[in-house]
Every structure is written in C-alpha cells, then in structure tokens.
Image 1 (cartoon, one colour):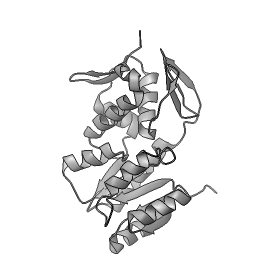
Image 2 (tube, one colour):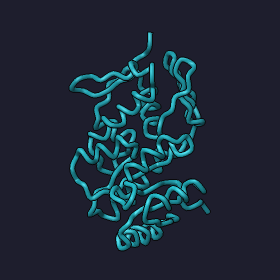
Image 3 (cartoon, one colour):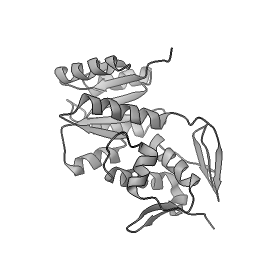
Image 4 (cartoon, one colour):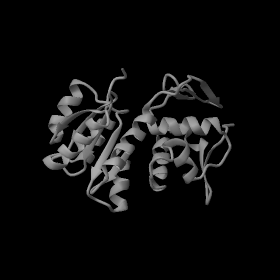
Length: 229
C-alpha cells in the first residue's frame, strides 16, 4: 500500500483546522495540526512533512514570515508550501508567492478545491518517471536527481521553478504563453491565475544567476529559453 502523503496544517482557528483535517484524512492524507508557527517549526525540525498548509495570519509569527525562513534554509528550501489566507487582494497573493509559497487558497474555500490544489502541488514535487539529462549551452539539468547546473555552478531552484526550467529546456526557442505554461507545468485541473506564472518566472531567473539572460520575455506573447552563445 502506498504511503499516505503527510500534511502539516498550521491554522489558529480550531473550527477551520478541524474542517481541513477531517476532509484531508478522508481524502487519504496523513494530517498533523498545530496552531502557531513555533510548534510548526519544532515539528519541521524533527521530521519534514510532504507539504505544509500554512495560514497567513497567525498569532506571534505570520505564515509569510515562516515561509521566508523555511525558504532560506537548505533543508526546507524545497518543502511544498500552500498559504491559506482570508486576503483576496492580488497584492497579498503576490506577496505570498514572492515569499516562496507554491500556491495559495483564499478563505472561504471549497474543500474540494483545497484538496485539488494540494494534490497539484505534490504532483509538481514528484520526480519524473524517467531521468533524462538535458543540455542547452552551458545549462544542464538531471531530471531524476533534481539538479541544475549553469557554467559548472549548481543552481538552487524550488520544485516549481525546476519543472518550469525542465519544460523550457525541452522546448528551446519556442515562445510559451502564460496560459500554456499553466496547463503544461501546473496542469489544467486547478484554476490558477496567470499572474502566478510571472512570480515563478521571476524566481527562476533569480535562481539561474548569471544564466538569467537565457530566459527571455517576449512582449505580448510570453517567455522562451534561448541557446547561449
């Protein structure tokens, strides 16, 4: 029997936490619930969950602050994080993604949508069935080992950024619209705003370092990966 994916839920409202836990367990997840960031950090230091579902507004330390701390640590840099927020404003959503979250769910939420989003994030984290090595100029990736290198320097990329880079390297020179990238990388099972693509493209460029020029913005069309001279 396959191991159940483990989800650490950090939510300070007991009724919402219980609703999430019951539905996730019913859908085949292993769930642990805590109500503030200190307890969450202690559990994460002990054993990494498969995914962190984190409320934005928490007593003491905010979910956004914990996300930034986890992304700054090599051990937790690739931990999938979904923010749960009552804030529907686009600026707040972008702030959560810029902090390092893989996705967000806005309260009030549909439990079916929540579960679909968590599964989508976990799918993006899963290794590819095959383990090819792709090479584009000085840029190379080993899909199976989840390693990317540019000019001999290992790159630090999150799971979504790595999947984006893999897709670009499989289609060098081709321009991809935001809508196309959402379908190809995120999957079309879950509705995600196109602005999400821009945030992850920005993070991918930062991760590419001196190779950031390889990822071009084509005005009015989308993005493409070019071959370095």
